[in-house]
Amino acid sequence: MDAPRDVVDVHVHVQPWEQISSSARSTLEGDMDDVQRLLRFQREPAAFAAHLREHGIRRVGLVNYVAPDTMGFGPSCNDWVARYRDHDPETFFAWGGIHPGVTPDVRSEMVRLLDELRLDGIKVHPPHQGFAANAYLDGTLPALREVYAACEERDVPVMVHTGTSIFPGARSRLGDPMHADDVAVDFPELRIVLAHCGRPLWYEHAFFVARRHPNVYLDLSGIPPRQLPERLPRLPMLAGKVLWGTDWPSPGVRDLRRNVETFWALPFPEDFRRSVLVDAPDRFLTRGPRR
Ligand SMILES: [Zn+2]
Image 1 (tube, helix red, strand yellow):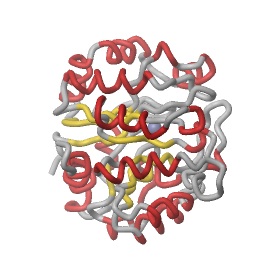
Image 2 (cartoon, protein in one colour):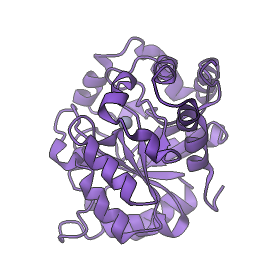
Image 3 (cartoon, rainbow, N blue to C red):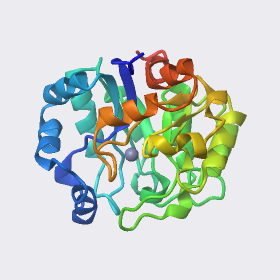
Image 4 (spheres, protein in one colour):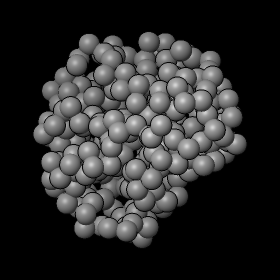
């Protein structure tokens, strides 16, 4: 059987390029085949949606977050991604973000993000934002609790970057998935997805946290699919909680479809592969009272 043509990719990056810092931009563009095409997709949601359909991708999560120091993105990236999603909500799912350390009133900003802009999910990026996912616990960032509580209350999922990052200024130590274990303990109804499964240092930590908590999921983005059977051999045990993602167009991820085909050829059971590419991510992005 051929690879599905109705793939759901929870993790791609279409972002407002006018905000990106020059160092982050050169890290990204240095590895990109076609920068002009990406710029066009940033301006024209319909062109990107057509490109996705050509590649057998039905739905994507657009990852944006506030990280002024490392990436350059400020709070208005949220307005940007919400507008982008509104062009075609069937195709686009809007991940936005907040930096509780530089936001004067976190509670009211969460109301704006979730109730006014109706963001579909919140991305937390510890290595780029400079705080651990559990930084509300030790008093360094108490307001982070408000972020999780607001999402839990509305059944809005949170994506936590886990694993290292090669962007200038990123603090990779903060990418350990074990920090999200605390979040899952303290917010048991919150749906959490561990992006990148802690790659490349903490695969076992990510697997443990996802296995332990019913509401913790994994996304496979940013991991060369070929490496999965060796790095995460027990992945099929978590069927239903393993979500397809590519991290396109990040360094090393050239083509949305090629990664799907490579994944489809892996020696995992076919029903599991289908669940990863279509059913589990579709359910994850759809569930919740707000849609
Ligand atoms: Zn990413």
